[in-house]
Image (cartoon, rainbow, N blue to C red):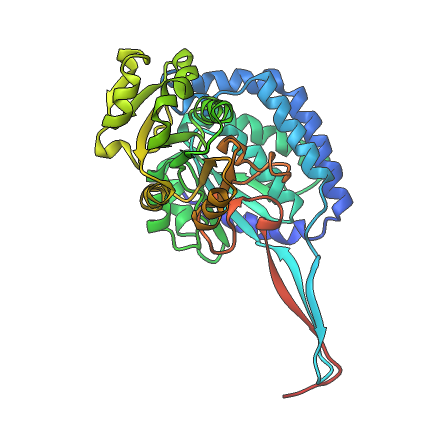
Amino acid sequence: MEYQIYFQNSLKAKKDISLLTNDEINKILLELADAVEESIPLLIKENQKDLDQMSDTDPKYDRLKLTAVSIAAISSDIRKVAKLPNPLGVVLSEQVMPNGLHISKVRVPLGIVGVIYEARPNVTLDVFTLCFKTGNVCILKGGSDAEFSNQAIISVIHQVLNAHNLNSAFVTLLPSERAATHALLQARGFVDVLIPRGSQQLINYVRESSKIPVIETGAGIVHVYFDAQGDLNKGKGIIFNAKTRRVSVCNALDCLLVHQDRLNDLPELLQPLIAENVTLFADDAAFSQLKNSYPGHLLQVAKPEHYGTEFLDYKLAVKTVEDINEALNHIAENSSKHSEAIVSENPNHIALFLNQVDAAAVYANASTAFTDGGQFGLGAEIGISTQKLHARGPMGLEELTSYKWLVWGEGQIR
């Protein structure tokens, strides 16, 4: 299939979107939120076609599934984004040079944003909303496992754009076929940045194959360190929430590090996980403490490969550490630099952890489940960046902008 027409249409749309005012953008987003809620029966019907083709034991099933509640929450996020300040045109710095030049640094759109993602139909709306608010055109390449859902969502967006006689290429959904992915990866000169959202395999493929700059929204290999001075009740709640709230998301807990002096508390610390049938892969010391209290069919001796694994399932690795330094070293060796947490009442240990851990989001006495654009006050997110160039952590409106220098003179020459 010839994909050039999609990219050319996006270039035209890039010019058209720059003519919209912030008030016009916000009005359209609010109308979109209403239209999405009105389309709940359609979206659930089309989503069910995708669900019918996936096993409900697949870790991606939870991410694929749309419900009336989840769609209403997406609509709420669209309204929140509409009400947020628009970062475009914000002057980041300005100065008058000795030669009289007036120089300012101003936020501008990235341009055309390509997003490649798997079974996450909510991404379709999140990406459009954030891109549209910031004057960016988006080209989406969803997976075949969410094809019906994505097409239905795009039809709702286009319906709203068409009602205002706006360019429907403000958002383009490429065909789900694999060739479309290859074409997008090669679309240099058309697409300004690519953002992959999905498995580590997908992210690696995009990074290694793309001719376009890539912002990695990496996999989450997430740790919680329960310190010698950790509060037992806080720890129970944090571990349970971080592990079981949604096991298929990238901020879900994968490995518990427990101080050796708190091994006696391990059975109580992990007792809530039994109700959710969480399988534990425990090292020898932790296994000995748990074998008489944790169900045998859910308790296994850990193997080296269990550490540094993103489970995306009801599974948790448990490792005993001698002190906070061993915990920090383990995290440094196994972390994906997504989200890490410490449970401790020792202010010196908390300060050391927050300072030393290299991750996009580092927590003290709170669940890693909060690593989310909405929870961080961004309205929604385009992904969680685990890299350091341009953006890190939840990517909201500001992260979808770059800047340019504006220089005013009165005939100065050099």
